[in-house]
Each structure stands twice: as structure tokens, then as C-alpha cells.
Length: 230
Image 1 (spheres, helix red, strand yellow):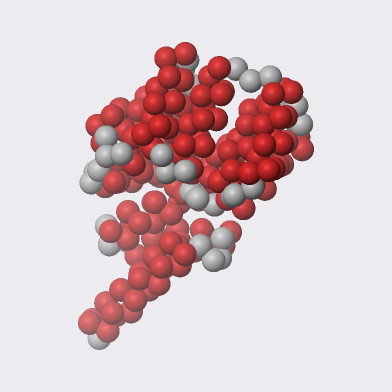
Image 2: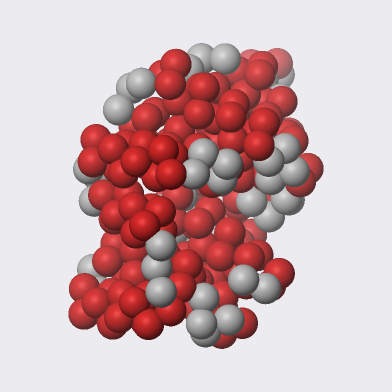
């Protein structure tokens, strides 16, 4: 996988984790334009197409995966992605654990594993998996985003904010990390910094409902504080 393909592939992963299917499709299609023989990208393309309800197109993408060749571990990751997209987090956990038995050196497996563990309320295991992802790949923004999200949802705001700041420092365009950072800053009473985060998300995705709601609530709070002071 060439460097541009890796960048597009990672953007697609970030987008699907954030539930942004159109953005995920655009990114993975760009990855395949750069390297049309990359089985891993075709595999993720199939997952995204399935999540978007395009079963026939997903089946065609899977034929491309077979043409490119697929390893046992990549097949497990594909199944895990399908299960997670369908909300079957227990199944996804099993697939990720099987994949980790084959190869525990890939940070993205630990990071994705952490997210589905979190969905099933395995809080300690999710923290451990997120920490492992960061230990393996301290230069990867996605690993720090996952750690930050896990810590935030486990009520450790200070450590979560450190992780999310690191994620954004590594990749200023990792919008899920920008959004999570904004939520923590808002909770910490840093309204101006939080507002900048939500505006960054909305500059790329102007109709993002979560960012719109967060920005609206923050502006309301700021205006109320001004009235109280006046």
C-alpha cells in the first residue's frame, strides 16, 4: 500500500468510526484510485458499502478482495468491521480477539478492539487495549483518539484531554478527535477553545448534528453567562 493509499485508508477508517459513511466512501475510493490492487482497501470498501446498505456493490468489492488475495487475519478484520457496523459488538470482539492471536503487533486492531469493548461496557479491557495501541504506535493520531475517547467515557477527563490534544497535534484533520476535545473543553469551562473545535468540525461537515447541537448549547451557555454578569 503506497503512502497516499495509507493516508486515504486511515481517513476512511476514521470516518466510519465516526459514523460518517459518505466521507468514508470518498476516502476509500481515493485509496483504490491510488492502488486498485490493494486487497485491504477493497476489504474496507466492502464493509463501508454494507454499512451503507449497498449489498450488491459490497459483494462485487468482495470479489475484488478475492482477486487480490486475503489473509486469514484480514478476513477476520473484515468480519469484525461488518459486525461492528451492524451493532453486533460481541461478535466483533470475538473476531478481533482471533485476529490478535494471529498478530498482536498491529495497533489498529487494538484500537478497534478497544472501541467495541467500550460499546459492551468492558471498561478496563477497553483501556488496556487503547494503551496497547498507543504503545505500539505512538505516532498514530487514531491510537491517541481512541485512548482519549475511552478515558473520556470512563470519566477521566484530564487524561482524556491530554490524549485528544496529542491526537489533534498529530493530525489536525482527525475530526472525531477534534469533536471529543471540544466536548472536554466545554465540560472544563473553556468555552472559547471548545467553540473553535466545533467550528472546525462544522467547517468540514456543516450539517453534522452532534457538532451543531454542541455548538448551539455552548453559545446558549455563553450568552446566559453574559446576561448573568450584566
